[in-house]
Amino acid sequence: MLATGQWLAVFAGWTLAALAVFAVVHAIVRLLDDKRVRGILFGSTVVLVLATSVPPLWEMFTRRSERIWDLRLLVPLELADKIRETDRERVFANPAALAQLLPLVPDFGDSVSMADSVLLSRNPSKWREDFRRMKWNAVLLSGPVGEYRPLLDHLMASPDWHLAFITNYGFLFRYGSGLPPRSLDAAFRFGSDQETAVYLAQIAGYYGAVRRSADARACIERALELAPDNTSVLSHAATFAAAQKRWQDAISYSRRALENDHGLIHAKLTQALALFETGEAEKAEELVNDVLLETPDDMYTLFLSARTRRSLNDYGGEAESLERLVAIASKTGAPTASYRVYLGQAYARQGLAEPAVRNYRAALESGQLDARQSDELRDAINAIESKTGH
Image (cartoon, rainbow, N blue to C red; front, side, top):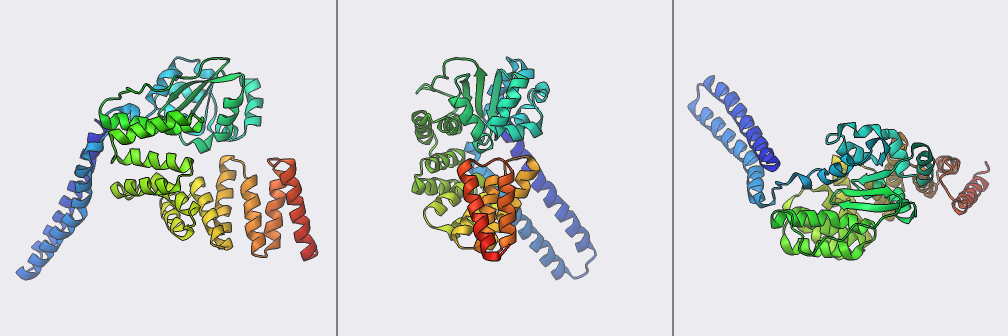
């Protein structure tokens, strides 16, 4: 139903736009006396409307087999059901989980503020301090794993917590001991072959994030068997291949996904990373710049931009990407120390001592570096200041 509604909305939008254009042209044509000019103007309008409206409608028609009918593939309904079974006042959730679950469980947002969630998801030490005060009995992690990777690793290693549930949208941890969730059965079905394949492809990434590689591989392989040309499946297969450093497979799958959907940001980023890792930094930079036009504040994309520019010896461009990254991280409460270290290095390579030292000192003062990293930065500062005489 949702996919059909989206298709109809787009179709209606194009239709209304076409009618509006025809109405304007018709009004202009009635004011013209020259029949030849009127014919050329009207014919040109018809061609223009067809040229702009037919391609997207044709693309939707050719990809109709990929329409999703089950809402569980579009929103985290399974996680929402699990949350309704718990004491919602004692559940910690990462930022993406809060955003996804609030429309489904309205009182869910009382468990933790968005600002605290951003900070604690990336800082297990601080999270443990707040846990002693808040006494959370469950932790919900959903969305991009990079947003909460430090906390996920901490929970997986902690004897006080156990992974209770894995879905195609994330994880639910519970306080105390317990058995890990069972693997999906080999005969698992989720509606049609297309929907089953999409679910398997989605959950594979989360299996991989908790190092259940065999489960992840089995899910991706079966997804590709069921729907080898599905755009979502191909995109997830590319991500899985990249996680295993199978860069050529990542490039192949992402290219096939982009052939189906030229604007698929996730596939572009995966392909950019794979190209970068295989020594094609210039091609990677083109894709990264393309993504930044649509998502200029995405932290992962900005960091990949900085990496590609550094490999191309574009240290000014690297510093530009990292400055934006530091500003966004500071605004959201995310740690900035590692970004400032790279930023200081980018300035140092340009011979810009003052901004290099400033960023090194800011990284030191953050308290986010270990003893070895701190000592290395002090040595770098001393080396710069000895050369400049400051």
